Length: 209
Image (cartoon, helix red, strand yellow):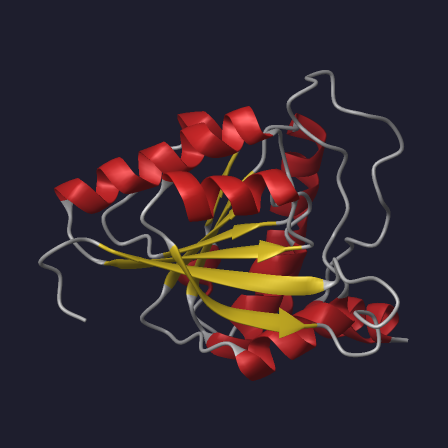
């Protein structure tokens, strides 16, 4: 029911999963975050218009449109699969037609590139991952984020959904990021303890808290 409701509300199509794997062994098959999980995320995690969120492996853009509609935050997607990029771009046009009163400039950036090639902007401060790629790629992306934080001191948060043990180990043992919050998805976590969001906070030394 939630799938149909939000797809109609947002005027997008993101429900179909990927039918075949990506050619690269480092990039995982597409699967959108369930709307039920996104509802609980937005209820228990502060997102506002001043945030600039990057979704790595954004697929058809579900997270982007949902967060933009519910929070007004600036959202950007990075997707290496050209087919999904085209579908996300089509969804952007349809979303913009339905929600002309919203500032759709805040959602106009969808990049067709590999995650490790995306250039982190000084205003990017929230980064979302739903296990989109291997730990090798994840480490490179986090390294890019840390370099950006050194150049432009600021607070940054990493949001992991259905977090892999490799991602968790790397963040907690090889970076300065610290666990800030765990959001267990009610109705799902009881059957599968991977159904949760982990929020990691990083702060450049000297940046204001």
